[in-house]
Image (cartoon, rainbow, N blue to C red; front, side, top):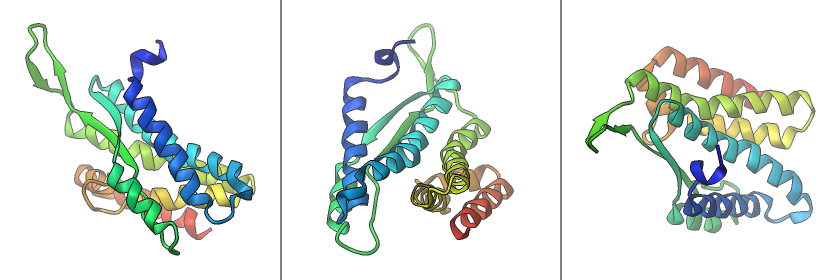
Length: 183
């Protein structure tokens, strides 16, 4: 499968803008470690969003990353503060497939939607453990923070969707995410 069959030009542009912007926001004010920050953003943010996209595609749904310019603007404003608000965009999922005659039918079940929502935080938890074991605390902490934040039980965050799907799985993931952050 070719990259232009999976990503549109607009989606690639949005992903690049979000990745570069997050790297600048996280690196500020010390840009001497910008390569490490870029690794953290690619692993923590980009792979999280791509996990959602490919899980949704696996279930035959339409999925693409959409930039949220207002979220980026807020991120750039808050980069001067100790606590930064980072919401550059998200994967938008259309849980429909198109039938033979062009009609639309609901395709994603609640179980499939729960899986799609949970894979992003699972990716962050995985990389928090991996980079923690490797002793690269900065990347591990970014992934722990992203997993914990995304598991907050608030829609449209992943946590609200996972909680709606299986409360015990949400509680487990949140517990593991918080544990990785505390360690």
